[in-house]
Amino acid sequence: MAARDPTELLEQLDLKEYEATALSHLLSAGRTTAPDIAEATGIPKARIYGVLDSLAEMGYIKVYPGRPKEYQSKPPETILERVKENRRQEYERYCNEVEDLRDEFLAEFRPRFEQADQDRSPTAELFYVVDVGEPSESETRQLYNSATDGVHVITNSFEYFDGIESAFSDAVDRVGVDVLFLHPRHLPEEKQEIQADIVDRIAEEYPQVDIRFSEERLPWRGTFVDPSMEYDSGKALFLVEERDVPNHRRQAAITENGSFVAGMKRYFDLIWEYESVTEYPE
Image (cartoon, rainbow, N blue to C red; front, side, top):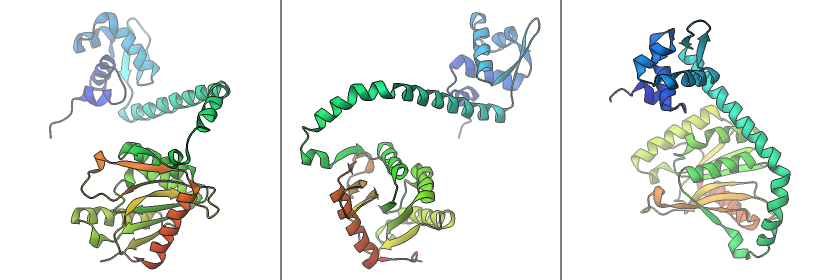
């Protein structure tokens, strides 16, 4: 595999082209002046001081006063930590801006939503859909984050675990979590390997999570949280089994219908109790 251009690597940290070019040069050249940087990199002299001021403001380089000023990159480890800190501060500022809008936003849009909501039929309220992939993983993370009572997962191999592990981990610390896997004999070999790896990781890192393996094929898979036999709570994301349809062409259904989620829990309990095993098959 060909080595990646250093400037392209730095651009992944949300640097503009000239900023990435200048920083890449400084990481190799050490302490130097703006005219030397401009000459070495081809950055226009009219732009170089603005580029360096931007890098200094982001905390990636040091500026030494003098005639002329000199510039030096901070260590790569420091740059990476500063990137994360800048993004954290940016996120906090954005959250504060959103909170500042809360009262005005709700006053403007809540009445509109409530009026429109009154016109929806019960059927329309039962489901909405998202694409399988990052949209469904994002919704799944929200399910874990919102859970106050319990999380229940039905999955084949849990191959999307990496994408939701942070939310999974937080949920395990708050509520009960159980995972019903499909028995590996129903999986192709490559999926068996993925499942075995995920099962081992969960068993080692989250020993409080209950795991079982369904001996029969599962007609659907997904995640549901906070079911109630009073039918007054719960939310779920699921997709039905369609072997001939690749995931990138599929959609997952989301429901907040308490009765439907209660039905999913009853199905889950029956499989868990009567059609599953606890030990990972050898």
